[in-house]
Image 1 (cartoon, rainbow, N blue to C red):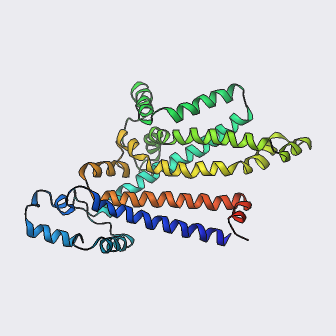
Image 2 (cartoon, one colour):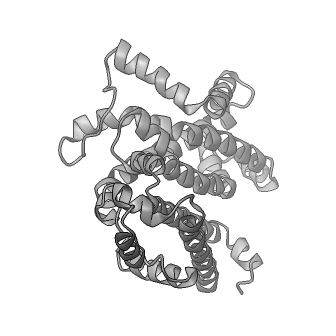
Length: 319
């Protein structure tokens, strides 16, 4: 197992290395001069422009710029915002916890609801509840999230006045009010993942139910729940883990739209403003942080593969 994990960690490091290069290349391919964008109305002063280019390391070759940027990034220095002229690290730390809190709640909802609905659909194959769950899953996959968001706001916030329309309350300040503010955005974030996980769980369980060892277990008189949870579910987890890894990426990376609609001051809202303002340091930091989350989630899923099914790590070369 150690060799298997080491190999996956090495692959993750290579991917992260490539991400930093591509991310930093943004400063080269973005239209205009980064120093001019940084200075704004003061860009006409040539002496000030030269000092700014030196301060931002723009007067050095690309590879030197990249090395210095990576070094500073690893030390926690993400540079200064071109628009706000504030340390990017401070701006991100104010908002990162909000986005990760929303993503974590949405992940718990998607995993719990998705797997339970998938199990219910598989155990009631071609019956009423299976048809209902399949219809809802298809709606969750195909319906645009912004449309679902607006519909939920109208029904639950404006019409019935059960939930707040917008905003965010930290859980450590008022847990009850925080949950009320997070229900709608977290549900909208989790909906596509719930639908995908439901369909995948159902398909995986139905495949495993046709295996010989399941028929043998039935012939021995084992109860349905024992067969399902002890034998079937564990062997059906591999495809579900793949969907889980993809869900983590989509949940944390897809918070941009939800934060804009519900006016939540998280990373997604910040990066949207940064794109409009061409605030390159914030965009770069966001790309690297979200990429790191995605790479780590993929790494954890790979490790989980080897734990759930030892045949996978053996097939990958571990003896």
